[in-house]
Length: 290
Image (cartoon, rainbow, N blue to C red; front, side):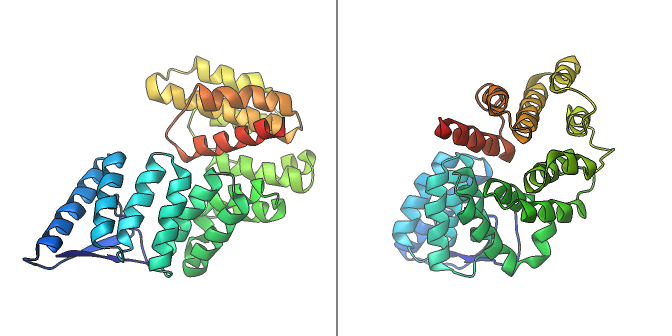
């Protein structure tokens, strides 16, 4: 039969990211059924048919309950559907079956962050990085969790570290600013704003100028509308424009204007990227305060 072996040391891509396949033959009907299910899981995952993945993993788990790759596939599918509570459960099951599966900590950390459970997210990210310390410079997601957990000085350090592997990213510069402004004050954050010159995404040039104090927030949104973008690219640019204007107001202590701009970012300009989930968590935090 086909069996999955969790690979702790790397990411292999696709729905079975973090898993490898080993082939054995069997004439046992149960094993043959399991092999068909695993093939179905893999095919559905590659097609991003996440509801199908979940259906097949439930059947496969009944036949092979000790196989950690099955709940891993389910967790990835739940994450793809933005069902983060179920993703947490699935990745927790992976770790119950295979405690050394570092990738499951990382994935569960993402789910915790998107649920607004920031301390738990950090704990999982740190567990992952204990096994994979070489990945720490890349881990901007940990920096975002640190920001929302109120651990601003650590966030500053995380985004400074991320700069070493991603020096031309306005978003990294902005999150460094946001942490620095909270750890100290906006003036210091502006003085230490990380310079970026090659991020060509609309409207990142204007976002950086906004946080540098060179232009007003309206100019960021105007740059989006004056761009030649259309379709999904325009939707994405509008999302980022409204998101970072909202976060600028947040750094200035203007909760009302933050919410005014965060609401359309989340509700009107939804995109498939991780940052939409971050924006949705932030908006929910604002709603919960009322």
